[in-house]
Image (cartoon, rainbow, N blue to C red; front, side, top):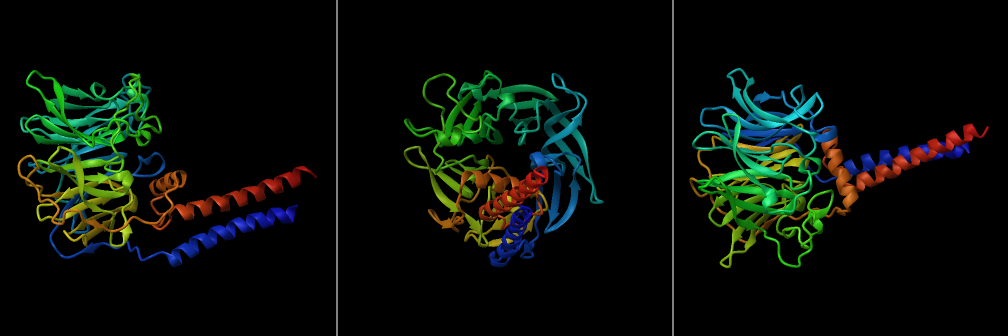
Length: 446
């Protein structure tokens, strides 16, 4: 029995060694080296960080080409970042260790926005903060905020699933998603809608990403201080399946009408950071479909896919969470789980790539001299074109989830460590555990 136990342990260790060595040898060239064509570029990056719980080692930093010009890393996580006209940087954040916790036990986590003031010596200082305590760090963050022309900020609130305007530290206006979507008893206890982005696209008009519903909604602030949803991108079709929206405590039919208002996952699937390109066009990081899409409004009012990016430099996108159309027609993509930010030209060719040490949430090219509401951005030059193919990995749900966990918790894991490697590692671990259990039984049986 002892020999059998040793054989099992050795088999597990050998299988793991062969998995790592063999996969590294046969993996396609997926160089993580920085690529720069020499054009002057300044790029802000908001890094969620990573590690257990995904909230460790977060930072906001500015790249000059591919060199870090300054970094601010006092928060567990940073999310959306943008430079304001006065040179300061607006960033959504999540951080722990606060003593002011309201109804929650101290210490607790806060989420909110910070204003960061860079200096000339490569440092940066948080000069202003608006935040509030949350029940937990899991899916409760303020991911995005927008400065408003008259002062104040519009921002998402994922904890209470709403958007709000904050002026002088006070909430002065809200749109609650419960006016459209069936609400649970307490949205702070579940990842219900995961509202993760807000963009001002006109006077008192906002484009909002409702991630778990696979939808973008246009919300208008009315003259009487109320709110109205004036358009839904990827609207729910009668009789359509809702499976992609109802897992893991997300949408549910609490009013009993048989509908949870779930958009078509073949159009958008748990998206992040849409960018309004002008009337009738929007660019979206279609995260769970591992692609970037440009949607156009058709003559009959439906939104259709007009342009797709699935891979860059031979590597499939893996859960991209941001895509920005630049003034020159290029597209800046934050390829989250491949831990890189990449700029592609109109032909889908990478002209600039930066491999990130930790998980990037969003990137913003500066100076950003205009917004979509002020000037239309270039549309895709090749309507209907798809750049790249999706990888041939199996897409088994449990294994896919484990791959996400590995890449988030272990930033040092190679990008080729995918579903097959996770499966073989689990078999290796099972063999080692079986051998260990056999040895214990043999010892106890003496």
